[in-house]
Length: 91
Image 1 (spheres, rainbow, N blue to C red):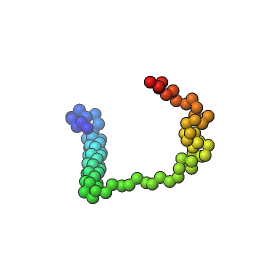
Image 2: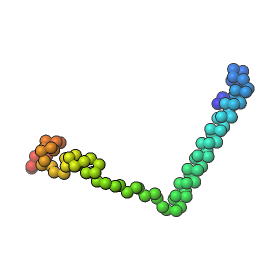
Image 3: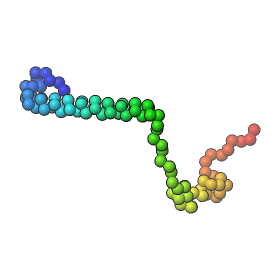
Image 4: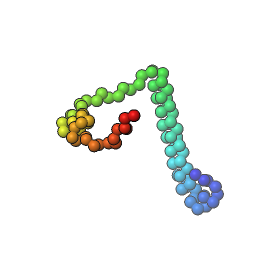
């Protein structure tokens, strides 16, 4: 925020003071958030424990249904015949 004399004359002292107060509050919140993030990262490095990924449940058949899961199971099936580029010629 620019607090030169011309801004005081246009906005007035009260408005400039309020805007400056909001600017300082925003800056302090940013510094606090940054400090907490770096402290948490340092603590995680010291403990050496990383959070594990959640275990997946179910299979593709459960998610897609039996008809869609069979599409990629056999390359010679009529559903996938002609899908994709031709193989390279034998040398």
